Amino acid sequence: MKVGIIGSGMVGATAAYAIMMRKSANEIVLIDANEKRAIAEATDILHAVPFVHSTDIYAGTYKDLKDAKIIVIAAGANQKPGETRLMLMEKNAAILQDIISQTVAVAPDAIFIIATNPVDIITHISTLIAKNLGVPETRVIGTGTTLDTARFRALLGNHIGVDPQNVHAYVLGEHGDSEVLAWSNLNIGGMSFEDFIEYRKIEFNETIKQRIDCDVRNAAYKIIEGKGSTYYGIGGAIAKLVDVINRDNRAVLTVCTLKDDVEGIKNVTLSLPHLIGGEGDLGVLPIRINIKESGLLKKSAEIIREKIDEYESKSIK
Image 1 (cartoon, one colour):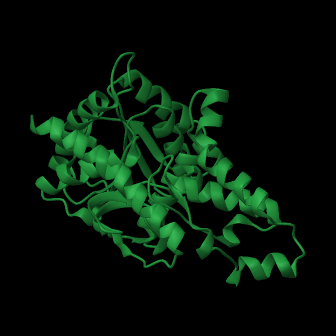
Image 2: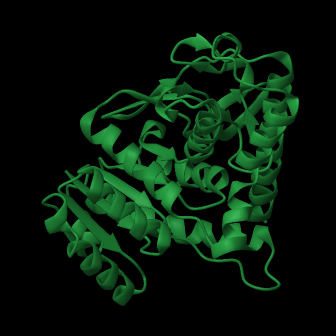
């Protein structure tokens, strides 16, 4: 199975490495406006192949995406001094139009995984661009809060002493400050969280809860402060999505996609639990959350919709 990765910066390159390490694809094509960077990253990863799994990895051009099943978009412009967020979104929209148009011309049946930030807005724009080119919404998936959910599960698992894979928890809404940790839906291996901590005699109170919430919500800021950017976590999330789609695993992941209605907010792109398989997005799974969390999810949807409105009003002009 062939995967194309457009954007060979730290996120794109780390995703390629993670895909190779997971044995999620047997062919990976790296494309970047900086051709030397794409060649260098592909060559470096290729040298690790003998230690892991036979994978054909190389730098290429759009024509090399022919027959690719999945296209990862990790490309985009960086914000420059004096440039507003809106200006950056407009610039990235133009880049996305070019990327998706060239990709669809050679790989019309590919599934797009969007990783470029702000991922909710970029996925929204990408979905509309792809739709105009005949690509159904089910084949445009943003990484959304897959990473935030992983952070939630990892931190909670560490506190209670359980493998994070057995911590069933979700982060919903925006991949950003307004994200919602769904504490009311949390369970440990099918056992309610409250019953589990009581049975295991684990200390857990509001202070601990707020600390975990804060650490999940502010993880990126702390990582960026320490080393400039985040890429291992999101690289792992992308590799997981590629693996699930390639093997048609039907996994539940908190990806972001275009929704007709979320808590009364129309036409918005944000994260909810989705069933993901070989054809892409197989649909949203209903999730039970409490009234407070529903209100927070609505607020998160409003924040994203406001940003979309801001971009669309500027674009029309």
